[in-house]
Figure 1 (tube, one colour):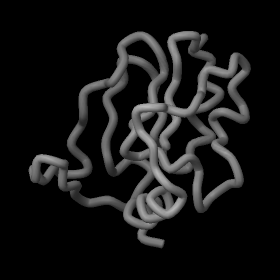
Figure 2 (tube, helix red, strand yellow):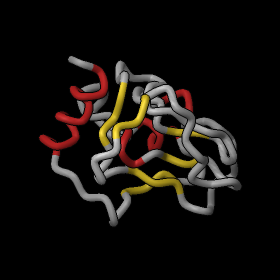
Figure 3 (cartoon, one colour):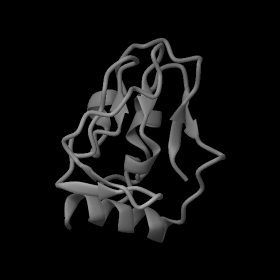
Figure 4 (spheres, helix red, strand yellow):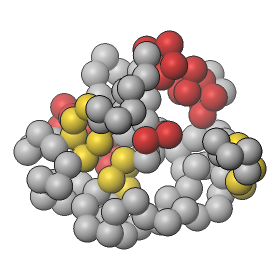
Length: 115
């Protein structure tokens, strides 16, 4: 599963630098697939191919957010999700709508980082 940030977020920013995939962004900030990865382009679920440097709309205007498709729960980097480990208010939690096995998370990590 991926991690999500709840609306209890106090916008402290402690989580953002801890993410090895650069999947965490401040509210209102655009994001890219390439940020923190070796991706050059991404094929979306509908078959659309997107340049990985193309800016994407923020997923939240108000709170820090995690791009689910970039989140690997730190698999292949750390023993536990680092955002959850450093969050002072415990608002980085498992996302029940995005369940993935450890093998799927590792495959995602390899796809993004080529390792």
